[in-house]
Image (tube, rainbow, N blue to C red):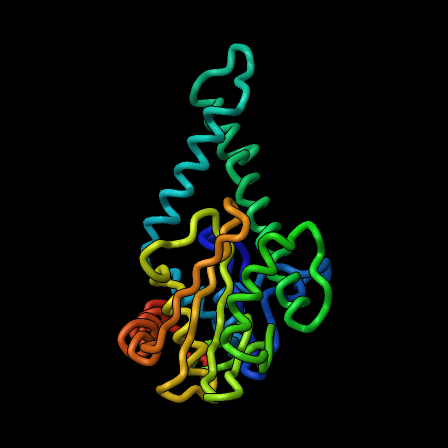
Length: 261
């Protein structure tokens, strides 16, 4: 599953084979382990980018603001060495020790743990006590969509592939809902963040959803345990056609990328 909302490395890129296998890393040429898959590798191997890779073409002002806040906090709270020049101090804290990354890593670790525990609970396993206050309110909200049809599997679509979180079906109405879970300090108050709606629209298009079916973002607050915000998108098809698809077209054009070659 995805990690903490808006705390993703700008350098991270995920790729998949057309059969839906993860190819985020490949063997090094010297045989010494693996390395992250690059766009050059993807072109050579005919791999498919993830929706989040496509969405990096968007400007994310909230993410930029968050990064600036973390950098400011790192500089304000880090101890300064005796006689250390200001420029050297900033260089050490932000670029050498990268202390601003510590909070981001903690958020990613907690987000991953919450995601994993949600998947376990939906499969009928008990919830660990350390994440119960986050997991169980979210599970309760999601179960309103019906029974789980699947979770944690890769779907492939037009020139793109990604791993979705959960797929539900209402046994009475047969309405299907594709759910994506995000952990964040402060969930959005006025609907989903745009990139999250766009990401979900890809899954809606890749899966056999009808126009009457829906997608939904589920935001879990890590700052206030128990707070869960659910935003449903019955208009996912329009979001795909007018939002995600043009971005995909641009990404392929800008990167001279054609997975059919």
